[in-house]
Amino acid sequence: MKRALRWLGRLVAVAVGLVVLLQVYYFVVIGSYRFVDPSDTAFMRSHMALAREKNPDAAMEQRWVPYARISDNLKRAVITSEDARFAEHDGVDWDAISKAYESNEKVGNEKVGNGDRGGKDARRKARIKGGSTITQQLAKNLFLTGERSYLRKAQELVITYMLEFWLSKRRILEIYLNVIEWGNGVFGAEAAAHHYFGTTAAQLGPSQAAQLAVMLPNPRYYDTRRGSPYLAQRSAVIARWMGDAELP
Image (cartoon, rainbow, N blue to C red; front, top):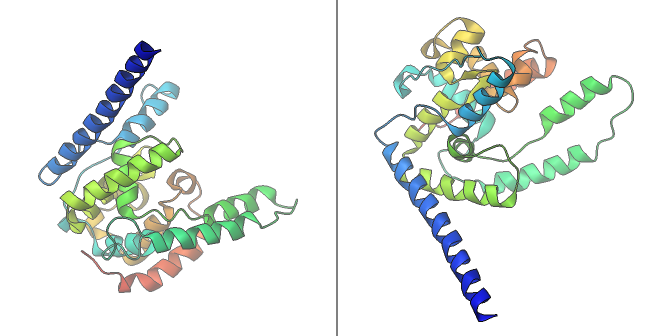
């Protein structure tokens, strides 16, 4: 019995040690992002691996551009749409999470009729909110998988606070806008501007920026449904309010 307990203790110690080493790895890598631009992300690698299973020639569109070469229109639109208190919170907006939970409870209680079931389901899904901040989304995209579990969420929170510790809000937003998914195989503001509007990230106008911001929660869906009434309506709302967004 004592021998079994000793082995169990050793296994627990090894597991704890591996977890600690993983956190040290994240901490060091994130620290390097103060000076080095990430070449890719865990989400990019996962997406492209799945895409190439279906099509070996699948390619990824992504071109890094510095913060100064990304339109302020896009920065303001994304902050307005995704994380209005980005400049104020410490990585996690607990008030937004609480409001998102309440909102999703209301959406979940809505009854969808039989007529136009697909369209109503799509609109209902579009209204569901996650409450994740820009920093949390970046943490997930840089290092984690799409798996949903309490352990993965806990790791996301740890990485989120590491990002806020090492990086300025300006740098966090710069990395986010360069790596976030904006369509099937489309990552980053420069590739998105070219893919949807044939322009550069620096030249995006207010309405174009608002449309890209609204696409973020479900970019592959809107990539093939650019005439969506919800996309147009929500973009108009974002365009109306984005001038009030505080930029880092």
